[in-house]
Length: 192
Image 1 (spheres, rainbow, N blue to C red):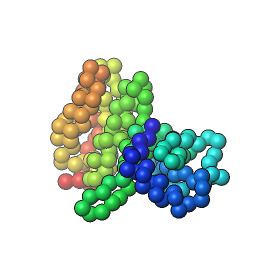
Image 2: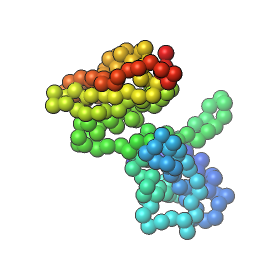
Image 3: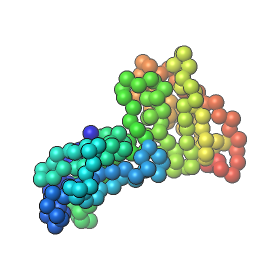
Image 4: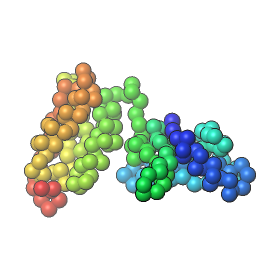
């Protein structure tokens, strides 16, 4: 589920000393499963804990997670880092924007998950995105580019040297290749 480092737990204990007895920490995701997903941490008084909440025991408190946020906090990590610039609490939630799929989910869903979680955030830097249209019987993922990728002069390089290499490595023995079916038309939206 979620991992909270010893340093982060110690930091939370210090913060909770100034709160009412029994106060815990709530970890949540606002707009889970969307590009606008944001993770947060707040105080959670005892009267704010719901029956459906998940309680993750920590040293001296519980981390409370609501049922809606739970699937989006799988593999999340909270740490408290100190360096020459000072100290900060970090929260990494790789599945906040996309719900993690099971390892035994259909191949198309697993491929789309990798695209949504790892590839589309990189393409978004250029205003682009990609999605799986279908998975052929031969094991070829048919992809559709959009946004700034549509008409981009580097789309072939992105497809073959980036996306295809990553997906074939990740799904070795299951995926035979990728194919782009986008009718690329240059326009104002295209990234050059």
